[in-house]
Length: 484
Image (cartoon, rainbow, N blue to C red):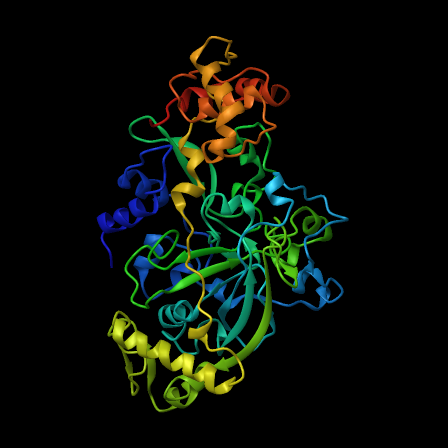
């Protein structure tokens, strides 16, 4: 297992692109340490340190069972044609989410460990081939019967196109959200907190997103996201995490290039059994029919490509092994009994051989399909620091308001941004457009901690900030700083 220091080093690398705040590695490690712990079976693992590290559920790779009650609702399983255009109360937060993106189309395989029940890969966590093997090895074959009655592995061909909002940040994936029975359980950013130096940093909450936190994640232009920041700001993006990095597991992983994903479908704020039509209209998800457009509600589609059983993959069927007094894998001895198939959980060479064998099984079973290694998944390029950059800025409701006046340094800087900077360097002004007002530019410069703009503007967004400041007066005193 990696030490706390080495985890911090990994997180520091993730934040290398953050320009608005020089965030120290120990600060990031502390911020992330508050995240995790949402599903009731996460700590059934034979490795208690898994729970201590993040306490995120591993069971999500099983997926969500298809319920007969959804048979008439085609969008719940196969998406809508292109982006959802009508009969929806979902409104794109920005222009970037309401139009097709310039992102490339990626086509690659995803895998899920499944039982004998019928599942759809909607509002679930999935994995690449090394990722699903890591899950099986750590969580499933450690007991008999196998955990969650898992018997096999499904393969899906996924097409994915990122939203323009993500592309502008240099990413094609968002963060991987844990999915518990179809409900996204975070970790979600839910506001800001002060670090030991008195500067703002993001604060994360576990469990379903609390709408009461929406005010704490409000944007610099005063426009509420209407959803968790992760989906409101960037659309219903496909999430990813390289195993060994945020959010889980954040320790050394010996399955090479193992990745997990999130596939957000309709109504990710509720469990599958509590989903209703109103929620699906408000939260259409990213699943769509055909080729994804990259609009905020059309980021991925899938096609089922086949199934293999674990018994086909291992040396001895598990029931036969158990009858003979054997055991697939004992995590305490790192060996099996009467089988050595799973021996060496931290042996990279042995794990590479298991990956190779599973690839061969799919190739032999489905000879007319493209080989896994010939349709590789795109790099998991989620960038923690860039994605959450604005949460190292001042909160929009902090401090007293004072409009910049002509002749002030702040006015000069805001005017240059509006008349020149937004055209030559739009990346300097995230969330703003050529139509943004001078107050919008002052607001952003203030939040970014520019010394020329020590005050936020008054009356922006119809007085939202002024009224909010009164409601959050005590909170404003707690979040005055921003790292330069």
